[in-house]
Length: 244
Image (cartoon, rainbow, N blue to C red; front, side, top):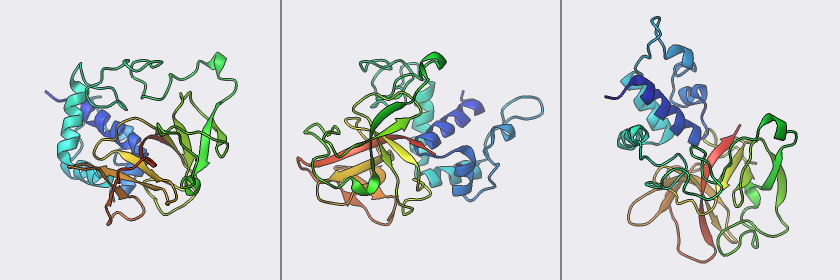
């Protein structure tokens, strides 16, 4: 039987993957900013409350997640053989080299306080500069001298990189001034956030749409749907985290 705490945990995980805190998600759903606060999830007896159907459905609409996808994520999180967050479906936790169970692919466990004297630096570029040539090799990994280095508040393994959001056109999903953590080679799933990168064309960030062929729904123009064209210099990189 599903417990209310599992519903909250799944909602928090999906919201975090899309860059929302509980209060930001509530505002995006048109609810009171405190609706999803942890303090409001527990009753006077210490037991978890169920989220209301109205609040849950409005939150899923703000996240662009169908109820069926949320239910599948909830069931998957309960299974002992479920894929770890950030891994392609069905891949056991820890299968990736250099990765510990429970840490998203492309990321390493947080450094201990003794080893966290200085932040780790990673490849980084502003979003507006991602259309230039020579940024990625044949595997879609960042390469070349155009990349900057940016301090990262946690350990992250190559070929993951960070994108500095330098436009307000994609709010509230990607806030201007935030940094998106991107992992090349991690297969995007339906409703994931991703970057569509094409040499000589403007970059596009949006929600992945499934079907016979992949397409993307841009954050800046959600009424449009862009097909992901096949080609050597075309990449669809999954966004796994957003720093606020």
